[in-house]
Image (tube, rainbow, N blue to C red; front, side, top):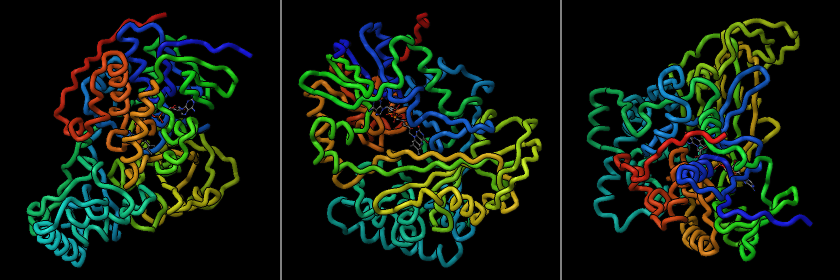
Length: 497
Ligand SMILES: Cc1cc2nc3c(=O)[nH]c(=O)nc-3n(C[C@H](O)[C@H](O)[C@H](O)COP(=O)(O)OP(=O)(O)OC[C@H]3O[C@@H](n4cnc5c(N)ncnc54)[C@H](O)[C@@H]3O)c2cc1C
């Protein structure tokens, strides 16, 4: 049997968290590390697929909203700056409900609803204000939080149905400590004023503007970040199937094994806990699955002037559609590419006659869980039918490309049992020299975006080497305030050949 190779710091996963850790080690001139990944390219869930026809699709709508200068500086260094590298967008998003486009955030725009719904929402808001003045203690579940902050009207028209579609989990089974800036609260005075003035009000949140790579999709960011690292320290197509905490050793599917002093694992924590014989903890962590359906179309940009749209009703399977061709120049093939029509709406076309563009694309996300099953065999058909139903496309629109991908781990659910498991599992693993970190490594949705993940990787290395506090992991509310200047500075290094 082959002998184990030895490495000081082993990183499992080359998604944003693993790349953050590797970037930090490289910056600190640490020589003895290795990053391995089951896949054959970097990026993890932030990678981008390309269809045979030349359409790009991310794994769900990825919008960058950075809380860290380190993240911004690294991206500038990896991809460059300026409009030749980045498309800059204003957030234009709507909730499609009651046959209308309501600007996001919904709770600031109830003035745009039919009058009877405005009455229900305003009445609910006022009742909620009165009740919360006398309520005891903090709300325990997301559902209680919604009712207390927004009232029954907004809960029933938007928050409950929309959140069920996203999380595939009833809001009564979710906790509310994770919320922070992730869900806009309600300014009751502003909501009432907007109703009386019949005013739309879209300005909210950290992602009011965002940038997106002109070429290569979100995945281009992480390929560029990986390209700044020494090639020989990254090993792809290497799936970890066993972890021995006592021997400090991982075994790969290939039979190869590695011994480490310290391990940074970005594998899903539920998987890691099963590998180390703690299935009872693993089973209490909940996640949903995500189906991504990309539709490439011939024609001009759609009728809807939006970057993405939320769908709370059951008139389509998805909770969000992104007009992905708008995000970057390279997201759709050039207009002179000749492509045959595969379908007109839902009707198959078999004539193989090719024609030029222009082209545009839609990308939708559908969630799945034990509470919300999805039929894998019909989901693409159902999605296209749904897109026609909600007016995202027409039944005569020419579809030239269809993309489908399923991710077993889509969103880490802030379930009511989550924090109890994390409080036990993460320190216990760390006591065994394993830093389990990242979107699914540490399971905290409130710090599970690309910027958070990268910094969670960076901060884990500073913790391993210097015992510094892992601010992003331990104090999500603090980093999500947005005004925080992280103390760790990114300094580019010359690329090593
Ligand atoms: C639907 C969706 C929408 C999103 N929207 C946004 C958004 O709008 N903005 C934003 O900033 N972020 C968004 N994200 C989050 C973003 O994708 C994550 O922040 C990021 O990918 C997490 O990085 P990570 O490295 O922690 O995990 P991952 O990206 O999951 O990377 C983990 C890596 O570990 C590898 N791995 C796992 N198991 C093993 C094993 N056994 N052996 C070896 N390797 C293994 C995987 O192959 C993978 O490459 C979204 C994610 C999803 C799914």
